[in-house]
Length: 89
Figure 1 (cartoon, rainbow, N blue to C red):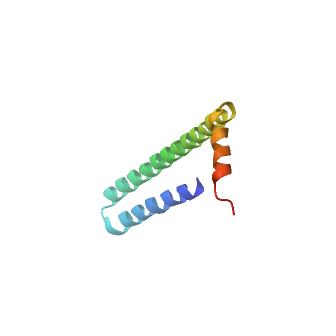
Figure 2 (figure 1 turned 90 degrees about the horizontal axis):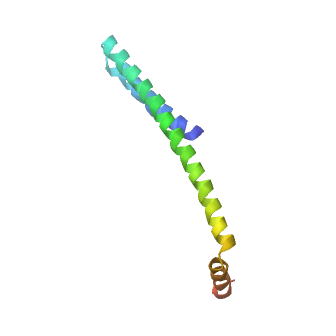
Figure 3 (figure 1 turned 90 degrees about the vertical axis):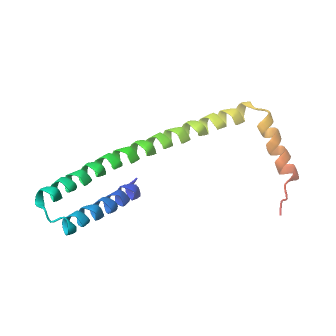
C-alpha cells in the first residue's frame, strides 16, 4: 500500500508542479491545485478499497479451494497421478 500511495503522490505532485509552473493566473492555479488534491484523495481511497477487496477475495478463494481439496477424492488422486508420472530428477 505504501508503494501505491507513493506512486499516487508522485504523479499528483507532478501535476501540481506543472500547474504552479505554467498556469500564471492565481485563481485558476488555485482551482486546479484543489482539483488535483481532490483527485489524490479519491484515487487513494479507490486504491485502498480495491486492495482490501482483492485481499478478502484472495483469502476466501484460498479457503474455498482448501475446502474442495480436503473434501474431494478427485484432487488427491490427480496429485498422486502427477507425482507418480512426473519427471523427478
